[in-house]
Length: 89
Image (cartoon, rainbow, N blue to C red; front, side, top):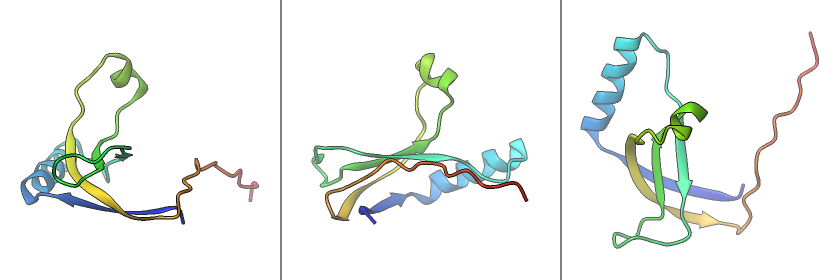
């Protein structure tokens, strides 16, 4: 394990997410969590938002932020996860 994060999401934001999921008949939602090098004025260095497609990013679509937080433990090493192939069953 490389880091543990604490993210706070307000109740009203959770309600908006749930209402949107139900309206779109989705089973879940993908989130992106960003760890920043600098800490803001509130002692936070983590932000989270609804994940965007490459097309959304290319078109500079505004992110829907859902919460902020902080890293409260780290071993100083964060590695990129690699997808392992699964043999056919």
